[in-house]
Every structure is written in C-alpha cells, then in structure tokens.
Image (cartoon, rainbow, N blue to C red; front, side, top):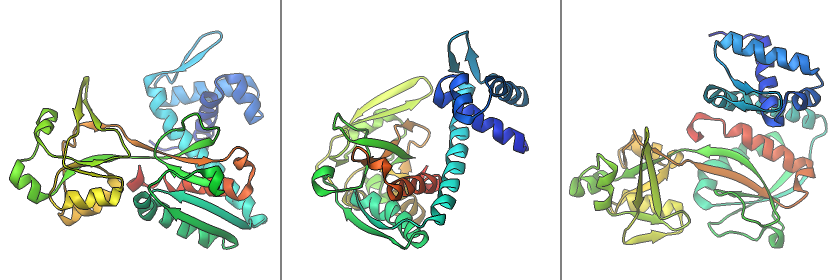
Length: 300
C-alpha cells in the first residue's frame, strides 16, 4: 500500500492524539483546530479500512489495531523530530563534555558504534565513556547519561526509553549434543543455565494464550554479559541472550537458538540522567541521536 504525503501528516497527527490523550491536546500541540485533527483521524481510518480509536464524549482509547499502528506512527514522528533537531543543531554546533556510562557488553556491541558515528557528526563534543556492569552513582560521578536495562526506581533521576532489544534462548552445539535440544518450555527444567545475575532468575515464555514460568538453575553465575555468552559458547548451559550478541554467533555456528516460536519479555533500554539534564543541548542531541540510531533492525 503506497503512502501519500497527506497520510504521513495524518500519521503524525494520530501519534500526537495518543501522546496528548485528547483531540484538543493534539490540536494545541500541533497548532491546528480540533476539527482538522478529527478530520485527519477519520481520513486515516477510512484509508486503512479499520477503526483505530474508540471515542466517547470525554475519552479516547486505542483499538488493538490502533495500538499496533501507533507504534509505527510514533517512530516516524520521532525520526522526523530528530532529523529537524540535528539540522537545527548543525546551525549552532554544540561543544562541551558528555560523560556516559553503560554496561560493558551492550556498550561494546551497540553504544560505542553509535557514539563513533555521533562523534563524527559532532567533533566538538568531547566524550568520556565508562563501561562497567556496576550501577554507577550518577550524581556522585557527574554522569550526564547512563544506559540501563531497567526502569527507574524512586531515585529522583529522569529517564527516557531509547530502544527495545529482542532476546533468544541459546546453547552451544556441544551442549545440545550431550543434553538434547528442548522442544517445549517444560523441557527447560532439565537443563543447566548460565545465569546472568543482573536479571531475574525466572524466565517467562508465552505462545498464544499459554504462558510458562521457568526457574533458571545452573552452576555458573556471572554479572558480565560477555562472560555469560562465552560460558554458553563453551557448552556449560543455555541462556537468554540479546539478539545483537547472539545473531553473529548463530551465523558462525557457535550457538544454536531454541524455542524461537515462543515469546519472551524484551529488554527495554533506558537513558537515565540527572534532574534538569534534558535542558542541556548536547545531551538532548545525544539522546535524540541514540533513539534514531536504535531503530536499526538488528537492535529491535
């Protein structure tokens, strides 16, 4: 189905309606009349041939189709905003130091490549990058941005979601030769796990309306994601591994993914920063850049 320029505009309007919670709120945000906003929603639903919103006199809510469609509209709106922000920033090239911390493996695999490109675009911004699997005290260490894989506790800090990383269950060919390949979640109780201590010890698997809760048990525990993958490659057990880490090793044949038709909770990646940090032009620039960078297929 081809997309016209008018439909793209309607998609941005639709995203704003959801984010503002009302047609009037979206109209105010976009500088349009409420009638124009309503027109765009009706035109979008007519074009798609499906209802996106449930409306009453006071409230709106997403239909199931609308919820799925909104995720795509949101990405389009964010990318357009990020593109405009990058052009605006190029008019007044940002300078200064950004101190960043993130876990070692996700840093090496995803954040450092992103920062390589970011630094090329904005050479006058200095980067101080701390890779550690320990939770750094942001305020004490003067950190501008911390990359974390969990939502904030009540810390007084601020956070924004950067990306969602998919995961898969993996083991080495040598391991499966000894212990067999699991074909059902109940088989996992018989297997050894390489346990990553920074995540939950329980794995949730779903397929359709059925769900399974698996307690992971094994003789190897580690707080380092790269070490976890290395132990799995060594044939010492299975583990839940992010796609960005597992995919090259699956292609090389050193890992095999199993139970791919079952869904697992994805890993949400957040950027955490001190109160008021979003007022920093160079930090806003980095956050917008990372959000746009993480739209790449391998990371989603």
